[in-house]
Amino acid sequence: MTLEGYPQIKGYDFEKGLNFKEFLKSFALSGFQATHLAQGIEIAKAMQREKATIFLAYTSNQISSGNREIIKYLVKHKKVQVLITSAGGIEEDIIKSLKPFVLGQFDVPGRVLFEEGINRTGNIFVPNDRFAYFDKFIQKFFERIYAEQVAQKKVFCPNKLIRELGLEINNQDSVLYWAAKNNIPVFCPGLIDGSLGDLIYFFKQSHPGFMIDIAQEMKDIVDLVLNSEKTGGIILGGGISKHFALNANIFKEGFDFVIYINTAEEYDGSDSGARVEEAITWGKVKAKAPAVKVHCDATIAFPLLVAGAFIEEKKAKLSKGKK
Image 1 (cartoon, rainbow, N blue to C red):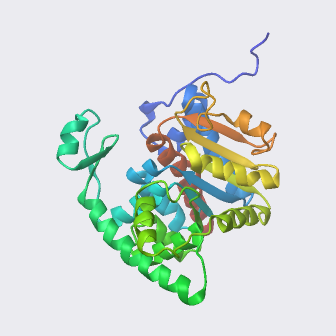
Image 2: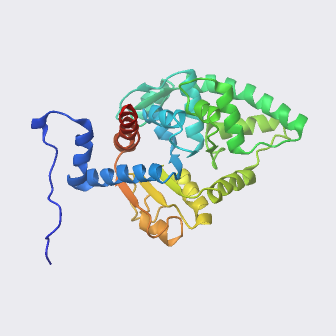
């Protein structure tokens, strides 16, 4: 075996000072997950060049974290065309529009936090009173939606319901607000798996006729896939958000581009940990699609991906325009 032609491993030279664009470029030859991240940046650039419909799928903890602001930027500036998330990704965007989450620690005993009425997501603390604000907001919202359902004989599907939520929240810090304003659909196949589901249960007790049309949710996302010339996926984390994005793209013989960012492993057969190669066997990703899995905490990798693929591209276009 000859290694002739293989690139040499080399990291960034800080003797030259910090040029952020060159710093990100250096990841390509750093090895390990830095190289995978550099590949992801190039794939995200290709999605944009090829005018692919970009599906951004993410788990709820991305909204718990500072990645909420990164996602909001992409949605506000129409850098992505479709969002897919879990119930928590909807709830927590609304809650944070009402009251903030705070930075805590991973290692505080659960019993201590429980007695203080504080919920924990990793090292992020969410006091119980946040959900009290959320409950009041949703109760009033459901009353309006149910009145429309009865008056117009119309049943909302999750993405249409979420659009109404975005308009209702009317807060420019919100992902859902910008999605509604820019007509970017937010799909949530697991809408009842969380606090929203709890509130739907209680509302249904007093309003037995209240319904949500989950079948229309499937039709809407598949129609969107079929009407797209090319599709690209940026998938943060695993679970239902990841699978719903991949499964919808089976109808078009798979994603044309895909980037996974997660820390899950495949040895237990989970969909969350499955690599792109497994998705190819199901027809969820095209066999020759540019694809990469970045094994990394998304709060580290995703902001760098966006900085390299979306922000730098924007600067380059502005520079060309000045000439």
